[in-house]
Length: 336
Ligand code: KDO
Image (cartoon, rainbow, N blue to C red):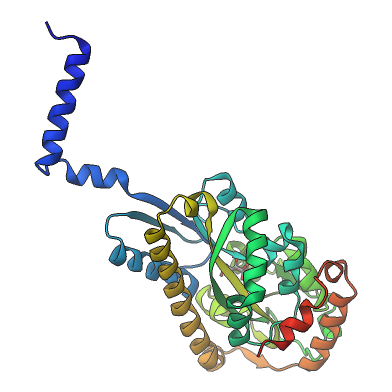
């Protein structure tokens, strides 16, 4: 009579015989693929949504069958701004997180939420790919349990209004209900611009503009196009107030479990994604004004120096500046 352990041994022997014969290969491979869940509020037509396909394609080429890359757009998996917590809890592997999200846990990072600090996308890349980035990302890893793999240029933020208004200086935005993403760091930026900042998730902005619950919003112009905000607004005010970046990050739990070869492949994919986004976005920003004009929008240039002076003063006199490491503003300014 066969005992249960004999039966188990028999089954195991059959299973390994099948595996050896190659019959179980597809199932076995599917089971060992490491899930890489991605969550982003980006809309499909935006470069920082498309970059995730570049990331996925790169990994499928360099590591076929090793990863199961799952891209979730439009904040369909996690609400905008909740991604870092989801990553720390082990519910999400990758995301692109904003300086504003980082600043909540790494207060000195608020320097990158301040208007008119970073000058242009090229300087942004040099800052974050150089010693300043290295130092800050080490703290980010320690405090947030995520590893930043690349810096994504989100674009230069501009003010976008529902009705045409004569905006020369921050005083001209007085009383304007300007939508900002929902955290106090974002609201502070809106107020620093002279407006009345009001919180709303990205996915609700289109309807907010359409219905008039908000008077305007701020975003880089490629996002104004891809999210179709131009359909429900009449003016773009070229304030150039924030050279914005988001950070392609992976949960440390996931990162630390990878082999050195896998780490290299994931890093290469993240670098390729950033490059794809950055090149396309910079190019689009260079050509996009005509598009808005064709759509009937009024595009105006305010007194940018007045905005810069005001916004910088507001930040320098704020609680935020008190935690900026001594000399960091100067070090950033010295990056050319
Ligand atoms: C936005 O909500 O205005 C913002 O631009 C903030 C960014 O940090 C980022 O979350 C972005 O939205 C989304 O990825 C949608 O483009």
